[in-house]
Image 1 (cartoon, chains in turn yellow, brown):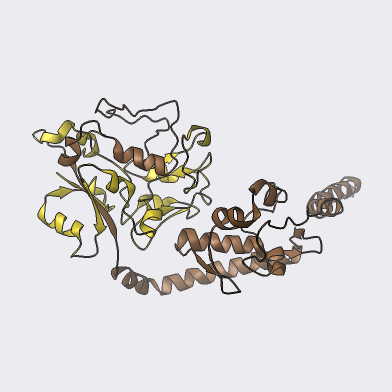
Image 2 (spheres, chains in turn yellow, blue):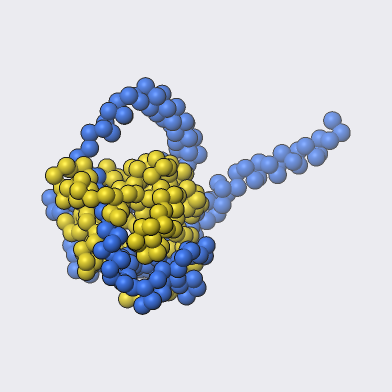
Length: 164
Length: 230
């Protein structure tokens, strides 16, 4: 998504990266609107801040899709399985009629690995860490560099920061 | 009482409809039998005693799912001290029982009442068929009402305790994305590709908005399903 679209309210015409694409994803809000509206508690906030999702429990009402101010949830309008090429047998596939979202690679975190997007980035543009720990790499980086978050005015308190 | 025949007829229809589940269960009970056990090829013991598994395997699976998905607690210590991974696919099916179609679907073929998460009031009869009695249904409904009311009261009373518990927090995962560094890699979609590949994200033929190689993302996301899970 282009920078100016990702940061509508904060766009600055003189910023160099205004037309550059930025990576957008689930912001794993501290105050997640999607969790508040879910009628079955199929989505919930874990203690470590990850907004997780139970696909077996999702009834496909799409309230969360409507509630998410970042458009970070998508709905399986049709059976996704025929369109998965080289399926990864370690991870479950989902059915038609459920909502999907970023898991922040919680299954990798449980195994002590970094999220896949962090690991694969050739420029090491993504830093991952524990925001609650003042000594962590991410907190040090955020302390040094100017950063922003998407739609901070909504009070969702995202966990994804953008260094500009 | 000129309408007496009508009233009686109406009552009879109402009673017939009202007791229909009982009749249906009664009629079906004679013909429905469990398909019999399929013993695993290479394993001698299960995660729990056979008698328990016969009556309560769905309860166990529900508990496993809640523990694994909600609490991230995958280690299961069995009654004999062995440690298993709480996973239907990786443990039950892959290690012992083989195909889901053979092991699960012969009984659990979508019939009413045989879904994951059966309420605990069910009684198993000798054929392994499970039914809910009217008594257990009423007991459950009553208990649910009382519990809901109690929980409301307790929640309201403990509101302050709740707020204090949230304040102390050992961990909050976060990410910092360096936009300038990211922009240096023109047309790079490695993060998206890695994520999609790892998590079995489908690529639907319609609205495939990924413009690989051009280095530009579409300026607006389509309202149709998008392959990019963000």
